[in-house]
Amino acid sequence: MALPKAMRILGAATFFVFLFLVLQVFRAEPGALKIPETGAKEGEGKKESANKLDTWDHDPQADPSGEPPEPLRRVSGNNYDPDNENSDRINATILSLVRNEELHDILQSMRDLERTWNHKFNYPWTFFNDVPFTEEFKEKTTAATKAKTSYHLVPKEHWEIPSWINMDLYHESVALLRAQKVQYMEKTSYHQMCRWNSGLFSQHPALATTQYYWRVEPNVHFFCDVDYDVFGWMQDHNKTYGFNINIYDSAESVATLWPETMKFMKDHPEYLNEGNALKWLEDGSHRPDNKKTANGYSTCHFWSNFEVGDLSFWRSEAYRDYFDHLDRSGGFFYERWGDAPVHSVALGLFEDKSKIHWFRDIGYQHIPFFNCPTSPKCTGCQGGRFTDGAAWLQREDCRPVWFKHVGMD
Image 1 (cartoon, rainbow, N blue to C red):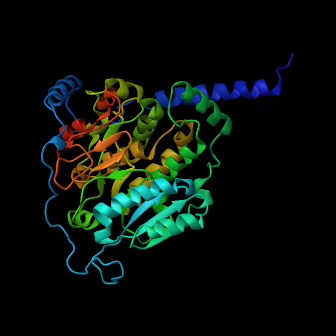
Image 2 (image 1 turned 30 degrees about the horizontal axis):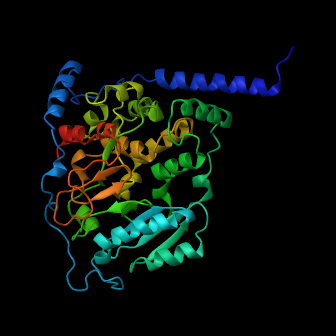
Image 3 (image 1 turned 180 degrees about the vertical axis):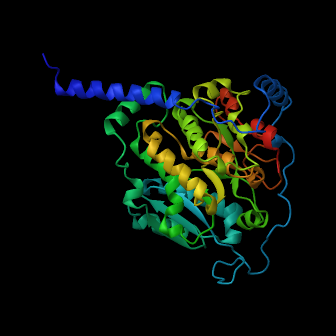
């Protein structure tokens, strides 16, 4: 007797999910890409890593934090006035992807950043949404800053689930990874947001002539007065990317990201930067469980809810090719690849690590993690605090691994 159609569809979907996961894991061995001079032998690396991590007995933020090296551009007279057409502002914007219902939360973020930094420098705010902004949203965010504000729709073709995604496979993958407690797996909009933030935001026409951006999320906090032009500092010191918090990701959410990356690098070894941070990406000494589950990737990543970056990197040939490869593989939907690990892996491979900067002097919180400098310029944040959550969250801090492999600038 023939099975009902619904059961046949479910059975087929289950088979394809199983086949997809097996192929993704086994068709590219972790570490199959052999890159000369990138690391010690496995045993030596583990011994060295463990010893170095053991010596990291406190958060560097517990030590006094000062400003980054000179030159530093500062306010002098009216050189950063909001209406000064010949101001010293460079080609940069504060950027936020935000929903209308998050108005209260984005106003919180704006108040903090304006109070601590932007009321001095008056860089414009650029807001994005996948639906039109309400008049209330526009009026209240405009009133929250002296700087210019602009409001833009995400193009429909950038937000929709791409045509090559098999929806039966997607729904079955959601069920499988939800059972593994992968957070937000069931939220389609979260997958869409991660994909857009990974590779499509830099292609938006509203940013076509913009070079630098500072990403700001709703309901984040800034604690420290910053008296220099952050964008100007990035330009003057030839930095590509600035981060604030460096943590581990959910390994189950990116189980096939590294195998797919290794496939890409086999085809494009020319994109590997000589000054890469591959050791950081492959370090398994601190969280070997993560590296095993993620098939060779440490899952260390820059928490991208705070990032100051040069859009030229996301528009480069290497990154565009890499993003297109990942996008076609389907992992933004069949798994839950976030923009944070995707950005971090790309930076670790394609950029010189010396061009990545830890903004240790910018106090910041995105629940449940902090970047808390010990500085008289900071209020409302305890120096050296990493989290106000459960004690086990301390193990999510990946900064020791970053410091071990690339140092601090």
